[in-house]
Amino acid sequence: MGVQRESAQSLRWVLRQKTRDSHQALDRNVSAFDLQCQTGLRGFLHANASAYQALLPYDWCFDGHVERRLGLISSDLHHLGADHAVAHMSLTPPTKATALGFRYVIAGSSLGGRMLARHQAKAQDSRVLKATAFLADPELMALWRQVLLQLDAVDSDSETAQAAVVG
Image 1 (cartoon, rainbow, N blue to C red):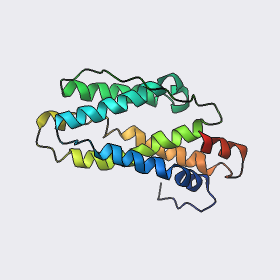
Image 2: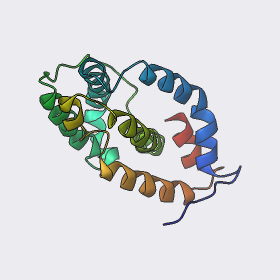
Image 3: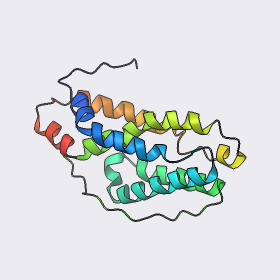
Image 4: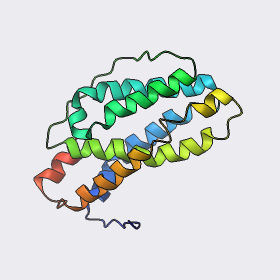
């Protein structure tokens, strides 16, 4: 599948615009973690575990990716000799209508994850270099492609599109 261009009217473009500020804030928060050292990587993985744990009851809208990603986090934490303790978070439950927006955000993290994985790969610590399952997850990129196809199939003026933006 080649690179898809997005038009200013596409749902993908609308979602990108609506999530821009949140995305920039998340980037700032993630950049605070040094993924080349055990402490930083543990903190990053624990933060992600908390977010994914909050999504677990809604895994139906992620086709099992949430539970699988939690397993990858657990594996990475094991390589670091850390437990799987998570802080509890809450979120507004997705509905069938808002699920596409949730999928867009989670699947879109695959792009950032690939960049973070390249940074992590420069670590000198062998334990950090073994804890790569979460960031190197190839299935998240497949989910991203699937979400892009779903977005392309939705008219950006439709009720489904509006619900995805809210989600």
